[in-house]
Amino acid sequence: MIEVVLYSKPGCCLCADVKDKLEALQAARAFHLRVVNILDDPGANEKFKEEIPVVFVNGKKAFKFHLDGEKFLKKLRSVG
Image 1 (cartoon, helix red, strand yellow):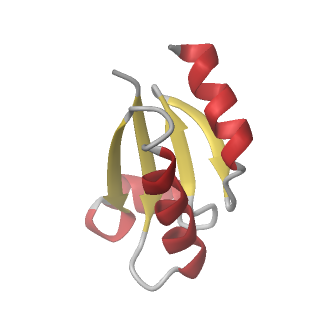
Image 2 (cartoon, helix red, strand yellow; image 1 turned 180 degrees about the vertical axis):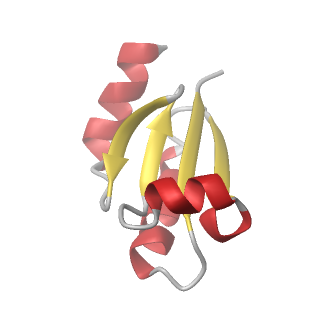
Image 3 (cartoon, one colour; image 1 turned 135 degrees about the horizontal axis):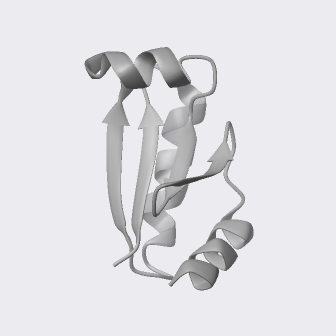
């Protein structure tokens, strides 16, 4: 199964929007979504604090700040 990781933090409205979009897109295409709170992960916080939300698909950075649903589904088709 394709793994999608969203790096985010509480109180981030862009992060909440991307998370909502990802959850809605799971109805169109199955994938495992893991949400990482960068405040709980010092390495992720240092790496992504200026870029959140960041979305990785199977370990590769795919989107940051915003998520285009059509481009996301196209990306999933290309990796799996």
